[in-house]
Amino acid sequence: LAKTTQPISMDSYEGQEVNITCSHNNIATNDYITWYQQFPSQGPRFIIQGYKTKVTNEVASLFIPADRKSSTLSLPRVSLSDTAVYYCLVGRVGDSSYKLIFGSGTRLLVRP
Amino acid sequence: ETGVTQSPTHLIKTRGQQVTLRCSSQSGHNTVSWYQQALGQGPQFIFQYYREEENGRGNFPPRFSGLQFPNYSSELNVNALELDDSALYLCASSPRGGGENTGELFFGEGSRLTVL
Image (cartoon, each protein chain N blue to C red):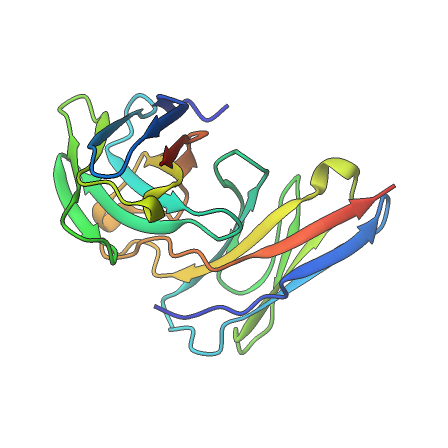
């Protein structure tokens, strides 16, 4: 299972775009990249998933370069409610042995 | 709202006691995973059940055990509680497991266990 490395914390202000980068140098060919968000005292919530290039949904965008050794979660125009911990995970979707393994995540603080 | 409910939400036990935590997954979800989350850390994978069979286990001792029932609800049992077992225990379900898993889990809000 590929390990991931993320910044421990980030600060931002309301209305700004936030980019959180995750390194996964040992990502395997069949691994997907998945991001989760967690608020205090709640379970993590799926945000977005991708394999390569760019994926966008109503919440975020995920940028994956050609070598796939890193990925960037982009949150447009953050608000105070985006203050949370963000986790980057990699694993082989569609493989019965794939289990979500969380790291320590990135604590994002959005200030007024 | 993920449709995954856990009980109890909070409980206090003493060292050496046993605890059972329960999870009701979304209707039709055949896969349930359990995670332990200590304060300030990411969730740690305990084990997963797929169609009532254990389908993978993390680095937890045998005193952590589980069950999945025919309706796909699940229990986590912890025997001989230790102080370090104090944590938020999260249950997550998925509509697909085995070779169809998508990497998307739906988490409940957890059961906070305090061991004194």
